[in-house]
Length: 86
Image (cartoon, rainbow, N blue to C red; front, side, top):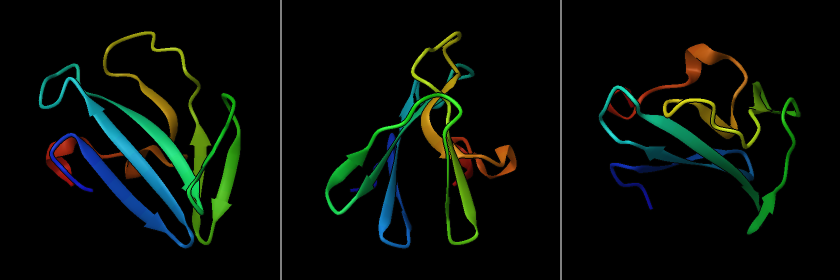
């Protein structure tokens, strides 16, 4: 289910679910969860997982500022897009 504030990216058998918080503002941030076969993949800050040619990193659960990235997302920050860039 993709919507303005929620986006699902298929990565092989995995799904990266991104929830955009403070949508469309300068404070927009992302919270990512990773799923495999209907089960959420837990992670800790700094964990990395390579799926095919893509490496994901867990950014932790602390949100030091509103636009922070939390949970799972791309390790390569150039691949992390704001809601209006996708």
